[in-house]
Image (cartoon, rainbow, N blue to C red):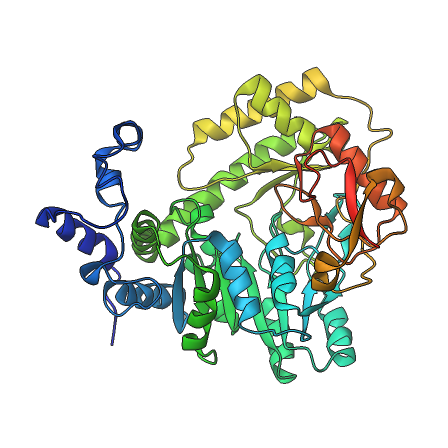
Length: 481
């Protein structure tokens, strides 16, 4: 049966519900905004009147049988998946659900080490053991790349009992592995393929962009609709292929996802799916054009390097997401985080993130040429005003870790707190990361080395927003006894 992508079932049901003027003796307690006038004034009456609880006419996210079920079928159809699940805990909850649905305690999962912390969190919850494929690193840019097919094959041959392979498609910087070849290789060995597509929603709607996971035959994919898809923050999809038991996946989702799914988030997913299904191709053609314009202008400034598909090498950089405006700043003599801070503090421009050597400006359908020109002008001014010698700058984002224990063993093990600079040689029992991008510098179970500690201190000095440890000041680290 062909589905009508013009339909928006959750939105339609909420509009019908509003017209019925039902008297609420259920939660939420603000009672359509009347009980919290300050919040209603801030968010608006339209918003508050649809912040409602599950009920028969509006279905139930945990066990959808009507409008949410129809909305899921439309989403699956739009993304070329067999099943789609509405996720109201962000892509973190989607990544964790697909790992928990695939790997039990003691199972092996193959993944690149430059995964988002949500993937390693899932290992703490499940007790699965990571088998890391350490990504190649681009020495000039200082960024971790994709997964090498040859290296993955070697890891699979050494670990034929692995249950799944997790792939970033793409990385935060726009780097793509050969997801089709990875999927075919894994499936030949009876291994499932999971894709973290937090930054790849647009791949599904523009044939000029890298291949999406469902097209490649992957078993599951986590989609951040709120990033490039236009929905509200915290709303995502989990997609599943035809060989996945969708009823079991829903059970796994319901272990951790709220029983009070926000209809603001659900309707935003529904409306955004319709928009992408009907207009996605033209939307992302425009985004590609804006990103190219920005790259061309930035590369004419001098010293900055806005990189793109010229990096492609057929393996660890199999493809590149040209909507990503990733810019290396090291030749300006500034860390990415320093450029990030200058853009915000001096020019009132908020970009996505800055790290040791790069910045990422997120470009979407909401942007216009004038915003791009303002960003380019600000970067030119920053180079003119603040350019320094490059000497003494760290030039890498990623240090290959030594994994000594599983994340679950280390996180729940007996631990002591040490001053951070006295922790070298010990096994870490918590996370340390810059956020964004949220890729751990240290994860539970990894050896703390002098190089890693120097990196952490350097990142702190440059102003990176550090998160993860129990000690909010990041002056002490928990290590295994």
